[in-house]
Length: 213
Image (tube, rainbow, N blue to C red; front, side, top):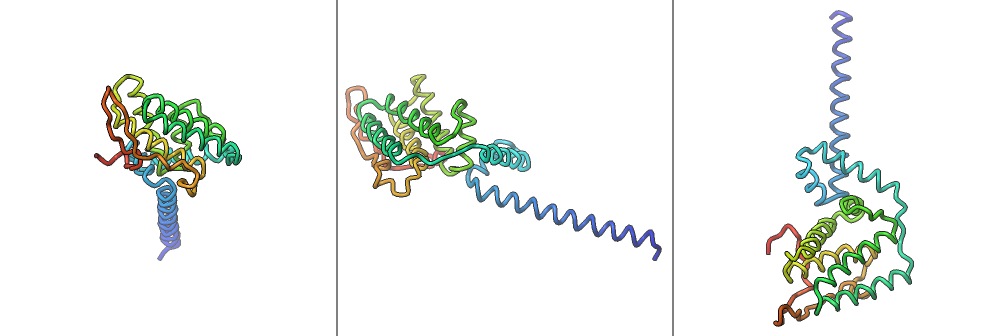
């Protein structure tokens, strides 16, 4: 066997090994992204239409998040927000639309106090998806309902669902390991007055926004 053939074989082996290592590294990156982003990974892949493009987007989110100085709320501030949420959920009984607007503002204010930029909704959702991937789609759904309500296109059931979605993110933003104890999870069954009649609206059940009723 000539020296040239031997060299070519060695080069070929090195190339194959390099490709295998690159594939393995990519698989590990994909696995890590799937683990971190959970359902948000699948959503991003579906939206991008390409796994590599989606993973690039998710990695860019991680890089942006690393530059943010996210902090915990001071206990007094946290208690203030818990009290504000209780007032908002109580208001839902008689005034669903204003209560949903209040819930949206509360979530945004907590984000701001914790260090998240809040100027653009899509960017807020992407930033939140890094730390809270399992509830970010709840946030998107709640925001869509809130916008629909501004146009007069949201039903009472839509508004109820928006409150549940806002609560899911609100609770996580407060770092609530015992939501029942702090009051952020005591949205209860209430009678909601709509157009002169009383409708019983269950505010306690949380559904996946992708799951039909």
